Image (cartoon, rainbow over all chains, first blue to last red):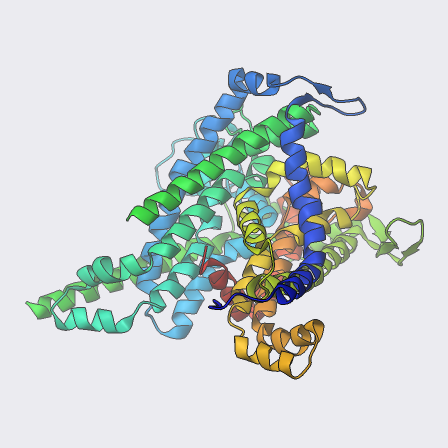
Length: 298
Length: 301
C-alpha cells in the first residue's frame, strides 16, 4: 500500500492515534515483560546484585570475571559444540526427509510430517524423562540393545559419563529439533514454481540438477529461516540439561543457559547471571546477522 | 540413457522412503515407550531385559500417581486482592492438569486478542513510529527469552505475581511472535475493503471488527493452537516462576515426580502420558491450522 501523494496531516494524526490504540494492549505486555526486563538485564549486569541487599555498582567487573571463569568458558565451549553439531545435522536431515516426502501422496506425506513433529508436541519434560529411562544404566534399552548387538561389552552409564553425556543430550535435542524444519521445507518445496521445473525437465535436466539448480535457490529463504531458528533453539536447550544431568558430570554438560540458571537460583548471583545473558544475546545477534549476510550474498 | 536415469532416481526414492520410514519409527518410539511403560508392572520395568510389548497391562502406576497427594481442584485468586475461591479436594495430579489448562487457555486468549489488534495496526495503519516498532519486535524475537529470566523474576516478585500462574502467562503474551504472525496475515486484507468501510462511515473499531477480523480468522486459529501447545509444553518459565504445590503445572509435576522417585519409571511414565496425550490429541485435531501458523511465520523471517 504505497501512496503516491502524501497523506494529509489530519489523516496522519488519525492513523497514528488509531495505530497506537490498536497496539496498546499488546504493547503493555511487550514493553512490560520483554523490553523492560531486557533493559534491566543490561543495567544490572554492571552491578553486584543478590537477594535482600542493595545492588552495588561494580562497573565491568562481572564481565571481567566472566572471561576468567573456567566453568563459563567450559559452558561456552559446550554450547558451541551443541550448536555446531546440531544445526548442520538438523538442516541436512530435514532437507533430505522433506525432499523425499514432499511429493508423496497427501496422507503419506502428512503422516510422516506428523511423526517427525511428535517429539516436539510431546513436550520437553515428557520426552526428557523417557530418554532418561532409555539411557539408564541398568534398565535402559540402549545398554540392552548394545549388549545384544555385541557393540558393548559392559553397561555404560551414558548420562553419568563425561565422554558420553553431551553426546546423549545432542541426540535428544536432534529428535526434538527436526519437526519444524520439515514442516517448513515441505511447504516451501510444494510452493516451488512448477513451470520452471517442467521446463528444465523438458530440456533434459536430471532430478538432481532440477533439485540443486532450480528448487534449492527458491527455498533459500526457508533455509535461512531454519538456520536462524535452529541456532536459537540449540542455544536455548535447557530442559534436557536441567532434568538429565544438571550440568554434570564434572560440568561436562554445562551450557551458558544452564549456567545462567545455576547462578540465579543456586548461587543467587543476579548481576553475574545477567552479564552472561548479555554475552549470550550478543553472540546470538552476531550469529544471526552473519547468517543473514551469508544468505544474502548467495 | 533417459531410461537408466529414471530407474536410478526411482531406486533412490524407494531406498530413501524406506530409510525415512525407519527413522520415523525411531522418532515415534519414545512416545510408544512412555505409553506402554505407564501400563507395565514394576517387575517388567525393573527388569534388565526390556519388555517390548507389555505382557501384563496394569493401572497401578496411574493409581499411584493419583493417590500421592491431594489438593483443591482449583483456587482462584483475584489478582492484587485477597479474594479466592477453592474447589473440591482432588488428587494433586488433577490440579496440575487444571493449572496447565488454565495457563494455556488464558495465554491463548490474551495472545490472540492483543496480537490480532497489534498485527492489524502494523499491517494496515500508516502511523508514525511503525517501522521502529516493527524492527523492535523482530529483534526481540531473535533473542532467547531465557536471557531475561533474572530481571523477569525480580519484576514478578515486586509486582507480587511471583508463584502465581499469571507470572507465566504475562511473558508468554508479551512475546512478540504472535504480533509478527498476525501482521503477516493482516497484510492480505485488501485495502479497498477498508476504504469502502471508511466511506460508509464505519469507525476504526468497526472497520477492524467487521472487515479485518473475519479475514484474519484462519491466522487467529493458527496462533491460538500454536500458543496453546507451546505454553502447555513450556518448562523453563514455569520452573522459574512457580514453586508451591498448588501452582504446579503438569510439566513441573513430572519433573517433581522424577526428582522424588528417580527410578520409579512406571510412575514417571504415567505422569508423562498424562501430560503428553491430551496435547497430542489436540495437535492431531488442529494440525492443519498449526502447520499454517508455522509456515506463515516463516514467510518473511
